[in-house]
Amino acid sequence: MMDPDRMRELIETRLADCTAVIHNDANDREHFAAEVVSAEFVGLSRIKQHRLVYQALGHHMAGDIHALALKTYTPAQWAERP
Image 1 (cartoon, rainbow, N blue to C red):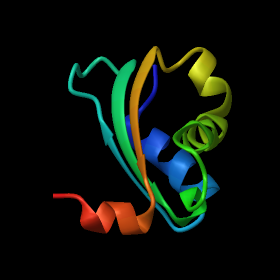
Image 2: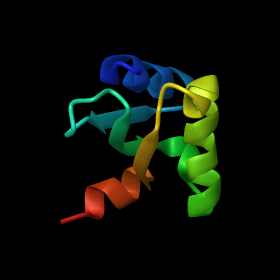
Image 3: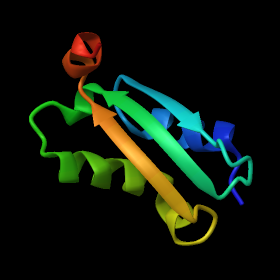
Image 4: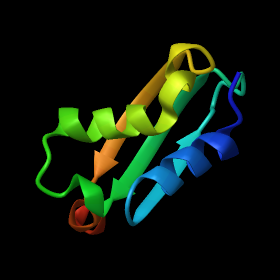
């Protein structure tokens, strides 16, 4: 199981200029949704952006986190969203 605050900390400390919002709506500490904004995503495909987040979470993706619905944004994309 994973603590949502720990997940946010891992992502934000490993990605440049990053803000991560973690949701654990099932309150089971295994199924998460995350919105991650990072300057490091600029110029990268969505797949590469997601890989960076998975790398930030490291071994937790193989055990502590059962499911992660992930949305990634550059700072400009985040500012433009409705």
